[in-house]
Length: 617
Image 1 (cartoon, one colour):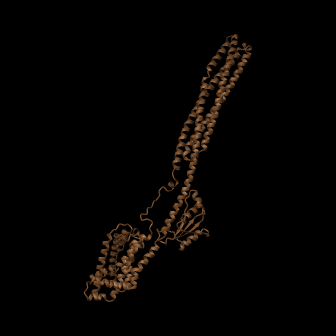
Image 2 (cartoon, helix red, strand yellow):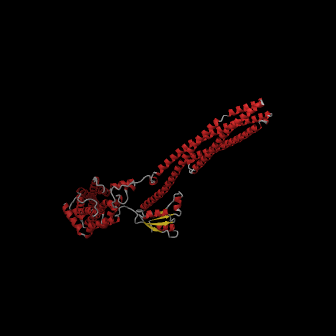
Image 3 (cartoon, one colour):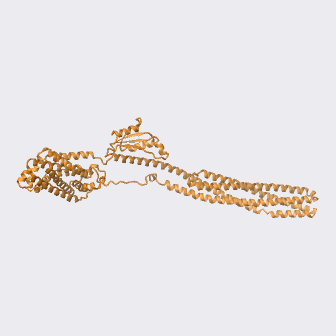
């Protein structure tokens, strides 16, 4: 049996019928044009999908969310419709809307109060192609709006922290002033203490003893005592001046303590004691204020004693004056003079005790001031640390807090249309159906004209006949391979037409695919009694292979056993080879061997089936 004669016969049969010409040349172009228009978007989005809106809040936050989703989708606002939430749910349930969004009342208020708010989204998940995109789009819109709201909130918090930082700066300045005043008070207390130390009570006691001895001796000594009293009067005046100076110092100390207490209270009012960061500091201020109040009370007590001492000095001075005035009359009253001297001795003893207590009080105040100064340094460190922490927080961008991780998507194939990625799968699919339909129906037509009878009578080998028909149909359909290759290169720019290596690889792939499915078509024709049966059988074979190729349903979503079966199919092998050269520019010829095996196996099956059919006749 000559292959050339069979090719001429099959070529005349194919190209003589208008239906075959339409199937060969017009139908593939129409299919490519229609699919190119359907899948001509850069990506699968929801720009043309109608989404119903029911905004029950009508707030700024809801407007931000609606504005975000309206930029990339078609929004139909039903907020004016009564009970719009139920209305939108019904519209989605009855198929008039793909999805609906319900923004509840109090949406903005709840977010402001720190409570997460829920958006009710009704999705028609019967639209299996679009509902995952709609759900992903709504989640992205919610995330974007949440980031915007979170950023605004953090900016507000940052501003409040900056204000708190300024208040801490003012507090630090006031603290430095308080410390300076405390140091000044310590210096003045030292001067007062030195003055009190210089008061010599022993001299007064000695003079009193001398006066008493004079009274005990003779009346003549009273004259000398009068002179001594004059000298004592002068000294009492000096003592009074010293006590007066001590009184002034104590008053000034009391005023300084009052100012210190006021500064401490002002410092406490300037911070938020409920904040755990400042709790210890507020406790230290309260403790310091209590010690200052205690010191004030002690100073006031010492002040009263000093004033009492001055009063006692004044009384003693008056007594001395009386002594001087009555000394002439007191010569006979030595006993009275002795009692008065004793009183003076008691007064001097009291004065000594007052000086001792005053020195102790000054020492306590000095210790309190030292503690105040130490606490001021501790408070200063706390303020500086707090300022550093606030600075480290507010120096960060709010966006980095709301979204610490940013996704950077790199599209390795650029902004290409969905059809560009679909084309390497469409070309083998179109060629598969053409090969199945034409080879099966043409051979059935020959069978109807008595071909098998002539084969049986002419003693032609069925295997040779099957192989000849497979090769003949394959060669006759080569123009279809050329047409699809040229259209993909010129119309859709799938690959450069002058890239000889890519063109040859694509041509070889499609030719082997054509060879494999022509063999399958010949096998179908052997078992078909009519063209309609062959056509339906071709659909029964082609459609499962289409679904198993990954074109309609990804392999990743299939069960593992089904996915392995799909990978092993001839259509999948051709699709993978086409993708390797058109999309990845890395031709992989592994599928060539698989396609050749399919062609040989199905050709042998066709020959074996034809032999069995001839034997039955």
